[in-house]
Every structure is written in structure tokens, then in C-alpha cells.
Length: 337
Image (cartoon, rainbow, N blue to C red; front, side):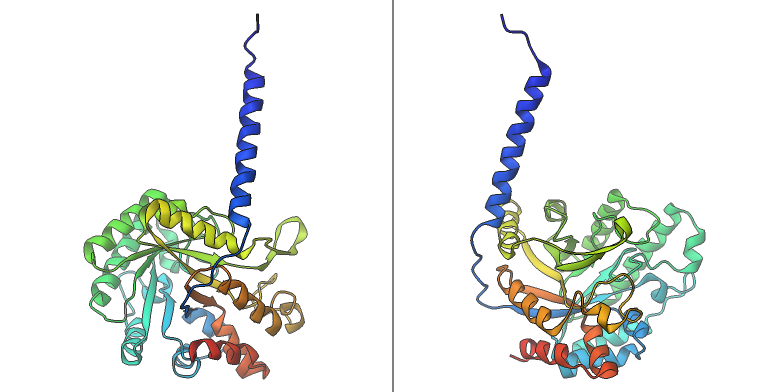
């Protein structure tokens, strides 16, 4: 008579799961994706990053629209610049950005919440660092309410991005709270039910399922070469075939009926320190004009139809301060085609 062996059963289950994982990876990675018939290009913009590069941020913002030709801009709404003192709101900068977008026919995705693009991700005012989690969350909800109510009637608003990669623990943030994310989304929907909500996830480290369950639109990142701080630090290239983005987006559409767009297409260096600190030689380890062109072709081969570049402020910096306009000029071809 056979005896029941739990360990043997577990081994068989593990083997079956491994085989299933291999089949899933093969499905995601084999073949080629059909290119989208029409591709829309945009940029992500950070006021603080433009200033870190040594510019008046308004100069960069106008250049992106008037010279580069960008008609879609994803804008980080940083908490510390919007509410530098408790209860004192700086609408001037946001009003100006939205007004310029309206005048130029530009569509905007405001990123709102505590975690928004650019390191340290959670741009918390100094005064808010001294209060607890619950008090911080109350202030974030108040900030979201102020912003959505003020700009929800603007014809420039394309969608609201609530938090930045909220399921990825990346950045200098005091806490991560999924239940709070749901409160933020519910608040935005109650204030502006007509405008879609975008939730973003890592393109390299996520299935996108969590975002697809709660968002109207799923946003993914697309990074190719990055610096890893672990093990003393090293450069790594993600071995992800372009078709994998297409297959994952197909699954998201099949299961959830949601569109996937790329909100961060890497178009600047990712080194061991900020771009304005490391040498140009070091920057070329992850970004050159040739790499840039190759990444554009890679993006096209994913089959996605909407891309927001990550690094347009850096292109301007390279053009204006280092006499290297190649990135800017190459992007112009896409925006002005």
C-alpha cells in the first residue's frame, strides 16, 4: 500500500508551477509585435529637475512645447512646491503651466499624490515631515481636492495620474499604504467622474494586474539600462524583448479591458548619481545618440501606441549647456512629423 508523501506532492506542484512559468515567459517573449498604426509621443516634465539642471523651469517648459513640439505633457505636481507652508497653497506655478497648455493646445496628465516622478519620489514639505502618517494623509487628500477642483474644467486635462508607481517601493518615502491609494482614487472619481484615472507600474518588475484592477488606464515604464546600487554598484541592461510589452498589454486588455500606455520611456542616462553631477563620459555608459535612436525603435516594436519620454529636460541641458543638440533634434522629428 502506498503511503501519503506530502513532500513528494509539493515537489510535483512546484515542478508544475515551474513548467507553467516557463510556458508563460515563452508566450510573452516569442515572436514579434505588430507596430501601432499611429504612435503618439509626449514628455514627462519636472519643474524641480529643470531647476536642478540650472534653468528657469518656465524656459524649459516653453521650449518643450514651442520648439520641440510636444503636445502631450505629463507633469509632476510636487507637494513641497504646492504647499510650502501648511495651508498656504502656491497656485501660481500650476496655473501658469495649465494656462500655457490651454493656449498651445497641449494635453496634460497631472501626477498627484504624495509619490510623484523624480527622486526622492515623495517630495514632502519640511513642515509635513514633523507630523504623523494619518495627518500626512489628511493633508495629501486636501491637496488632491484643491488641485482637482481647480483644474477639472480645463480642456487641457487628459487624465489624472494618482500616485507614481504606488505598488513599487522605490524612493525616499515615509510609508506605502494601498488602502490610502483607494481613498485617493475614490476622491478623484467623486470630484471629477468624467476624466479617466491613470495608475502606473514598473514595466520591468510588475504584471500590471494591480493597476489594471483599479485604473481606467494602465501606465508602464520602459527602462533599458540602469545603475543598480546593490553589490557595490553596477550597470545592468534589462533582457526584455520588445514583444513582451505587447503580450502583457494584450492580456491586460483581454482580462480587464484597459489600455496600456508607456509613461516613462528612458531617454536620459541612469547612473550612480544625478545627471547634472556625473561626467558626460559616465553618462554615455547608458545613453548616447545611437542608444537613443535604438530605444525609439525598441519602443515602436512593443506595439504600444502612446509614449511619454523620460529625460526631455536633460535633452535641453545637453543642447544648451553642452552644445550637443542631437537628442533634441532627433526627438523633434517625432513630435513635428
